Picture 1 (spheres, helix red, strand yellow):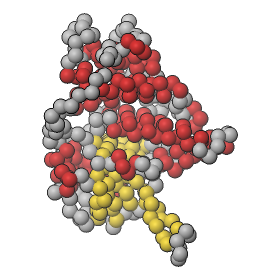
Picture 2: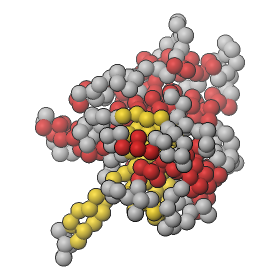
Picture 3: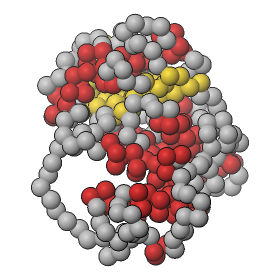
Picture 4: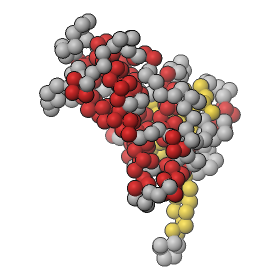
Length: 338
């Protein structure tokens, strides 16, 4: 694929919000209010609830206006979170709240637990992180490309740092160390939803008011900015579906790619380049690597995976190829040419 520069154009894009806070700080309610403002009164909110159905106490809250709920239980592996994201999109969810995303890091079946299992089975202290990191990165890539707005609730804990003299108490966010860099907006809440924004891109800064309690209005204001620009929702959905197919391995991805390529160009013509095909082609190398990773990394088999509880790994229904669809060799994907 050749490299090309074009005049920059603003594109509408989903927001990825990280809400951090200690127990009782108001993370869940703030996330739901923010989500309602982002999607509007008719949009669908989906909650992936790891907290023992705690979010259901807000099911009849008038300001939130209802939401879809998933009771997400252990194991809390990255791969099951990835599947839950795709299940939410399949249910038509516009904004996905994960409460709490910290479980993916430290709870049963999460990254730390997975790494400890690998060390116990013979991996050294460095090698034990390879598979957990791969699964985490695959989860985040899928989340970022799913096309929905994302709100991750992150627990904050206090530790005593004995390396300082005198020892000091320090707060830290319970999540993978690089995750905060992925957030479009990052804030900490306290005292039942009082917000302190820590990361705000310049276009959003005019809507931010430090020290206020989060309301639906805050989400609506953020969406005014996020919704500006070219509508890319169709291509985002196609790429998200291809990511889900790639997560099932090379064979499934080949068929899904072929079906998607045919559906985005003239009938019977695999060579003509349309704007959608050009955009798809930019992601092909990455998607092929993802499919290869899926074949080399055995899902959650090391973590007592339960494959059918949230839909398993199948080609997304909207992109399943028809019977008899062509299967392409690695060097012969449509569009995969210099």
